[in-house]
Length: 282
Ligand SMILES: NC(=O)C1=CN([C@@H]2O[C@H](COP(=O)(O)OP(=O)(O)OC[C@H]3O[C@@H](n4cnc5c(N)ncnc54)[C@H](OP(=O)(O)O)[C@@H]3O)[C@@H](O)[C@H]2O)C=CC1
Ligand SMILES: O=C(O)[C@@H]1CCC=N1
Image (cartoon, rainbow, N blue to C red; front, side, top):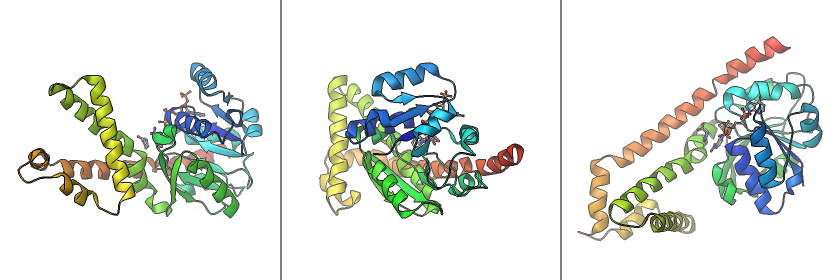
């Protein structure tokens, strides 16, 4: 199994780490995480998952067969700078960042053909149920793509997509769990108001979401057919849906995903910054 060096030690780095360790296929010692300055956080990651941590560029470089770039889009050039002269065609760089394009990362290494993969996992990696769309850059070999795909399959499902779709993927599946959690929170609040115990409500709501998700995955039926099956004329579902329609729930969701899509494209605007960074540091 490959050794993984992660540049970043935040939520996404932790979700992937947790999923890889939980898969039983990646020994915790194969993972090394780093961050910018938060010592406590690195200690916490070490203690929780038994992984290695370091902020020494030499150690990070020596450890990794694969580099995961898991810092915020605004921070990536600084995070990668110490590795500019080290990364090479045998050390794939796998970004999990929203927005940042493959081109801008490839251009960061003007002298070297660094293989760059752009992925967008989600935090369900913790329970090995992420959806991870990905796109490969021009220097990624078939073997490298296979092994990176395998790595993300260990924490859920994957789909190769054209790079042009990655901002849409980010809005839909990278961000997606947050929309679902917000819906769940709303259902829990309503449950409490109609007299359901808080703890029981959590169980009821999560099982309901899980069952609905599984049904969509295991049937050829569209969500629309599936909700119509639940709706008896004059019944409770119809009554509830009347409120959803009157208050524009579907439009709200569609607008939300459009806005997240636009935001992912805006975050990709850091390309200009990458070029400026290169000019100042070459
Ligand atoms: N959270 C999510 O659900 C998802 C996030 N993503 C993407 O993952 C990336 C990380 O997001 P998330 O984990 O939420 O963010 P966090 O803010 O939780 O973590 C960012 C991490 O990057 C570190 N960092 C910042 N600068 C550097 C540097 N120069 N060198 C090394 N590490 C550095 C930070 O260190 P320190 O704390 O010390 O400053 C921190 O550990 C983002 O690009 C985001 O778009 C993608 C899909 C889903
Ligand atoms: O909010 C964000 O920007 C990141 C990217 C996808 C999910 N979280």
